[in-house]
Image (cartoon, rainbow, N blue to C red):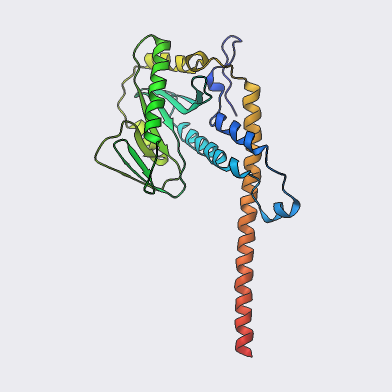
Length: 270
């Protein structure tokens, strides 16, 4: 359920924005072009996803997975999701405010791939990516927005959280953005020294929650809930399709094995 926070009847703060809001919105926009599946396609477990919606769908699942991890941080932390910044329509996957400081998280998904990070380079299965540059840029934009709203200089630590990646090798040279596996996120945050007093955490959390700090566009709770409900329905449909597809493959393989065994047996008897 999306947490709707209001102040004296004023429009809700960014805490009303659920994880992966923008990515879900884009996924559903593309998914609207998908043709309905027929009964046979449904029975065989054909995916309901439009081909161009798949990456957006995986991205939304990824941000939601990281949000579930962040839900275990505790009451000292303020976690904001899908924070819109500027007028371009881009957003920051997660903004955190807690005793160790302020953080921006980006959450690329590479299921089963291996990662290598050193300095300003992050490679996935040997291929270069732009993740570190973009993460540093997000952190700088967040620092600028929070600094303008607070009237001071604000330090923001950018971090890249790799989802679905089984292994990460780090080089000796430090990166301007922290790079880690999703499974390492909680221990990293909990292991950092406390730098902000509780009053400072509360102050910056309040500033970060305000829409005007990041963007002037109004966040409408009804639209948030509508997108979440529609995406959840799509997720259920895709999950059921995957289950059916796996079952069909198992039945086909089993039937093939039985057919081969029967042919061998008949040949042996002949």
